Length: 118
Length: 335
Length: 165
Image (cartoon, rainbow over all chains, first blue to last red; front, side, top):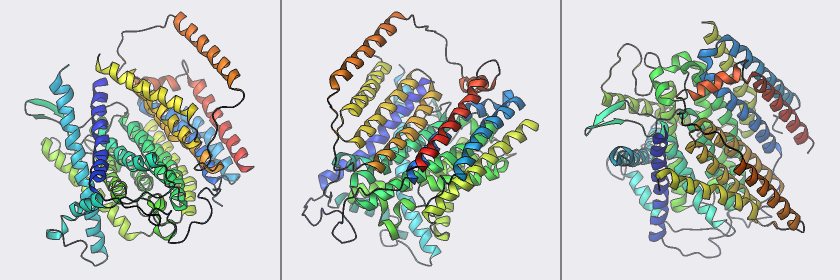
């Protein structure tokens, strides 16, 4: 089994080399004549106004929080799904309970408007 | 240590696979322009070589010789690394996808896959999670409002749809009883999973479009509101890397769809023992079909709005994926 | 040196280097990225230990979800590009003492416990066995269901906290 991970390791090294060959080649070949106007931050031709770090809406964070919960739940369910053949009805009942409890959470988040993008 | 079997063959396989993916990604840019042009009653690129087939080469040369413009205030190291990470992650995803059966090549028994691991399906999801960092890093390091908003959107979109990908795949795992992609292909010897999981297939297809930021879900780079999103401050070879990463991702994602839902290198029902090379050809043909689907969708459907899109994800797709999973589980249990 | 030893050393460098980066980086965003590197290194250890399911879950949950959550928190709350945080404050002496004590305790335990080792191969259907253990009443069905309650509590808590902003 580990040998397959060796193969993937070799593949990962090859895959990492290619983009950096491209970057290196371009580094050697391209001209570089920066001037203050070229290196301005792009804002559709206007001078930049204010800082980049304006306050973003907290909605992104709520989605990430809800995502963490469901991601962990999915991680639990993968071995369950693999073993499903061997355990049958009993596993079905348990998964219904497991998902049912989480569905309560999803409904709660929904009702409280956490999933609303406002 | 057996050097031939444990080092040289995997190395050759790796280089060949990476080169094919690179070529596939490059020609996907050409293919999309050509097909889109036909949808819009145009010719598309037709100057560089017959039918413009040298266009990707010309684009690559142009990208390499372009002047580098690194804007003020960027975080230089992360700014340079981000496109590379994006591209490498796309390539690495392919490491677990089997594109053919075992064959005898040059006196060696060679499996037509890079790594055959028990948790292949989870590997796909894990690398997809890593890949989203390429975009987040690019957007963050550019220090530009559009880039940052694009990166935030990309991250929110990717996590939402990764979840849906995972849950729609749970139904597949339930049927195939394995996370190993080769075994999932073997399971589809008679019927591709598309037949058993039509709803799961649809959910997966939409989610993978969204997860790879493809039209109509290309919200992180909406040119009418965010200029180019996370790529706004990128030019030259770095932009080209992001660009080819996106198109290579289309090829890899098509390969994933083919492997999981369309039977991989297998032909549905009856006609079983295909010649191995015919199997690879079949795999390629299926991938090309899914790629055409990608372009077809892009040419036909306008981009959706971000708030609607997030609502669609959490309030429609996620419950639907759960219903599909539980329905599949119930059917399997009672049949 | 065998290949796996070389890989082990590289992974250790990634995991420990990442951990040091988290502590010493002046920019919070970079600290979060160092944390990601550390997580990936630990996932590599799991692969070396032939715990492949755990390795993938490590990346999926920690790198794909928790680190993203941390990065969102940083992006949404502070002006990260211009501001730099100071990793040292006046309590550093106390922190060093506590950390050293914890380290000593861990070393003490690690060197004293007779860790059970087995020569047995990892069974080919280990994930299936894991799944069966998760739903079997003889093993972990109660923790499995309690985990969903825990996740529910986390979800409700998250919604309440986030709504108050």
